Image (cartoon, rainbow, N blue to C red; front, side):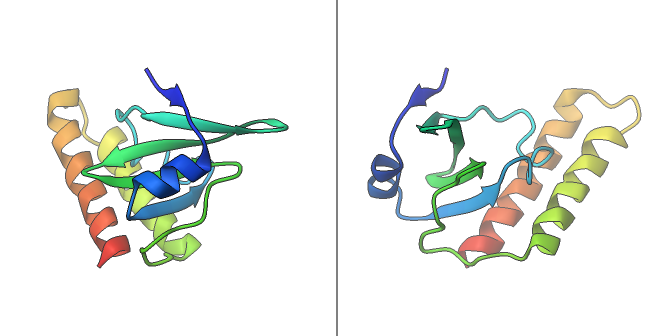
Length: 115
């Protein structure tokens, strides 16, 4: 279950933050539950995912990236399309076959953002 937090707390708690807009990584983050979320006056702002100590912030109003490279929209879409292909083109493969492939792709994405 995710908890409510502030953007300031996330910035203080994570050395590296990758920021993406809402649903930009919906397939790449498939099967991973957010650890926290933030709100704004209009309502929900963003979710926070912890990937090996690195925060991925996804939402309508994500916090700015911190100590990571900004990837282009096209590069983010490329990773999410690869994840979609893995998730939906595995034929009758089970989640146990798909999950490690998505995890590897997510780790590749994080490495590209943080190296």
